[in-house]
Image (tube, rainbow, N blue to C red; front, side, top):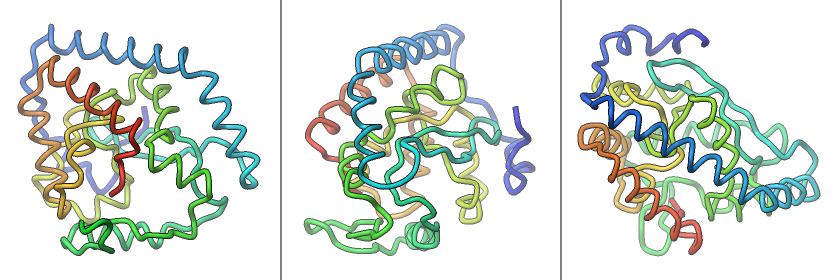
Length: 230
């Protein structure tokens, strides 16, 4: 494992682990393995088609790899389908995060605050579809099999996001980050970064195996009906 993210180290050391029982932890890991393996096996043709579409749509690899902050502040490399043009910078994303932390919406979409700029020129044509459906996250099933992520949990943070964190935010790193979670299925009700973290901590504090199952079952129709706009 790599060293903890430098900006988080001192706070993460003191982060208390969740009070989950051994049976709950074992069930969660078993569910992770089952769901990740099923996704990789049953959706393999879809993933191959998406990878080909990405390569045909714009120059560059089909997969995008990026360092994220995981459990205990450990850095790991997350794997997603590439949704942006090769060489796109992160300035607009950093600004969107700053506005999220301040509770300032970037725009209004369908009458609701949105925290990503509409018509982001960094995003490819196939990338817009992948982001709208959440299918860009599918390769993270590999991260789940490796034990770096869980199917359900807090969103994996980018290291520069920690510049915006308050002390109490760091407790979200007491568990593995997830592909989906409470914030992801409730995101339309989110108005700032504190809201995101509160929902992460709510998940940690109220965890049960059945909560994971419920979140997964709610996530599926959101993907099918492309209800991921944020």
